[in-house]
Image (tube, rainbow, N blue to C red; front, side):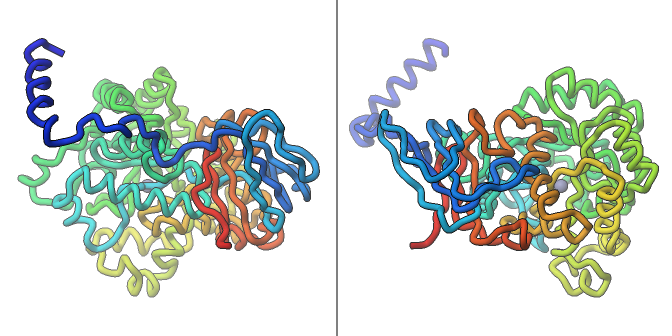
Length: 452
Ligand SMILES: [Zn+2]
């Protein structure tokens, strides 16, 4: 900081100091959401510590400094070396917190979204996002990967959650989507003069320009790179859902993201676009709407993850009649045409993917469906043919692996984050139990607890 700036600040602080308590006694007050200073001992009626392995009854999870330190048989007493508390969850089914790999925390789809976008500030979107983050957390989701938000607000929200200032899931943020000009992730639906005033910093054309865009997004704080490889349903443009980035562009994007240590995931609907992204070496594909048998074989060959996002179709209406009568009934004609074309396709697609053994990780595209309804995606996967255990794995161990955080989340094992939920009933018997989340802990902090 220059001397001149420093002296101006000193004068300003001196002038204000008399009137405002700039350095009040609670200046070092810790944030509201912080881990318990000592041991937390959780007595679980049934514990599914590692989805995919059998659950066990009468188990204890010992937590310290936000991490699991032990999982023990029986209901054991807290260690004696330090303060402790006991969470009595003897009447509950306890399992790792859920992970949603595809959300948009700053917005909620609806008829006012187009106007909101040009009338609200980034600060407003950050505050709105903090509310949606809380709903997501209270639904049992202790990690959420945000795959597309304008401006800086999503990075601020991620950091504010990390620092204990607001209640939310751990956020992995992509920032703005990497998109071709005029593509799904670009801004459209406004007159030319308005578009000129709206920056879309992920927009790029040609391999070199796209390398720049990826690097720029990492520089701004992206944890993961989101790419719109094909058209999308809800973009207000009659460009269909076909491939939009070329193979060369996708190759450059994947190579650049990986060189910077980031996973890269593609929004892709059309078969050709999904396959081009898979050939480019993308780690995962979002939606994968029109994937067919040969596409599934390429998924298997490339060992890539699929994030199917089925629940929004149920929320929006999975028949033309329901869509027209539903919350998206007033969509402009080009968008409605794309929506009507989908119908049952996502449900049939995910059933095929599961039958063929494609690796599936849970994602909802929440913002299209309401925030906080994320757990319905588990139910969609059971309806598509998964066992309840397989469905629970998509939103825990598998999502952690696909999201690159398997050393931190997805299961309750020593060394991992103390992210867990307590359910009123056993989801292995009835998957709808995932909708009744009574306690949520993230990083050892209790954000929701059973009503007394
Ligand atoms: Zn999305």
